[in-house]
Amino acid sequence: MSRKAVVLACMLVCVTNAAWAVRVKDLVQIQGVRENKLVGYGLVVGLNGTGDKAGTSTQYTVNALANMLRNMGILVDPEEIKMKNVAAVIVTSSLPPFAKSSQKLDCVVSSIGDATSLAGGTLVATPLMGPDGKVYAIAQGPISVGGFAVAGASGTGVTKNFPTVGTIPNGAVVERTMEATLGPNLTLVVNNPDFTTVQRIARSINEKTGFPSARAVDLSTVSLEVPEAYRGRLVEFVALVENVDVVPDTRARVVVNERTGTVIMGGDVRISPVAVAHGNLRVKVTEQPQVSQPLPRSRGVTTVVPQSGVEVEEGGKNLIMLRGGATIAELVNALNAVGVSPRDLVVILQSIKRSGALYADLEVI
Image 1 (cartoon, rainbow, N blue to C red):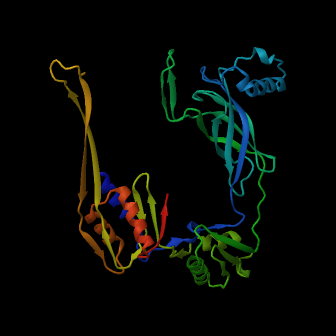
Image 2 (cartoon, rainbow, N blue to C red):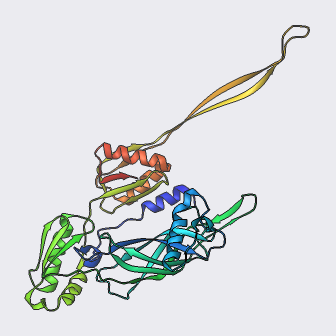
Image 3 (cartoon, one colour):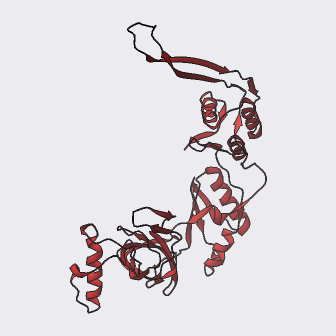
């Protein structure tokens, strides 16, 4: 399949105005119910010579290892520590809402020194702290790395993926609970703010629950008051609200990725009557060296003289007329008939938008 065919296929990936619905839980977030980021500094040991290199640039690794051994009752001179099997890392994880003690979390381990690979290493017990500086989890375990790095004695080698980043599934254990409470009044925050969508969410919730509990506050917020009948069954009420079906609404938008030539258009994109003409002007400059030979018995010198040529070719294309209210499919067919390239497609869409004939937001990324 040619690149142009791929581009046009991507343009056809759009959503129409059919009667489809989305659950409320996929459209909103409950304010205050969110995950919290955890981070910690640790050491990975057991590497096969791929750890941090000795030197002033990784002195923090030497100091960290010396401090860890000192806490274990082992006094070691930092100058005598060999670092090739040890790497300094940053460990990150996410604490889900309402996480309880002893719950296990996945964590990501990333090298911060000059280690070449974390494959085969084991993370030593690392405290993970929240934004408030308190320790909420402890991470430890063998690291899974989805890549490798192999180097020869001459310095050449092969690297696949990113061997300096690994994961530890269920490698962190929650030690402290992040307190969070849900009151009688909840606030739903819409992922994609839109006045029409929040109004539909509030109306659908009220129709589903049978209570006038939901009210649209602004384009991104829905205020939700828990009815008296559900005051002691808050989880049941939230589950009921999350499964309410809503037909969301969005602004008509055209997204263009100029680097890859990908164009995505929504089904609500409309075009007023407009004519599109596309012509390619190609200028070809050629240069061919020729030998200039002097006449016999003359004092001339044989030289190479460049012979330049310029060719101009203009491709003539037909004028394409789009009727008012043209659909996305008609636009694709028209642009295909004109024979545009991905880069020309961006220019055409920008020109249609500037002419006022494209009723959609044009976003170039």
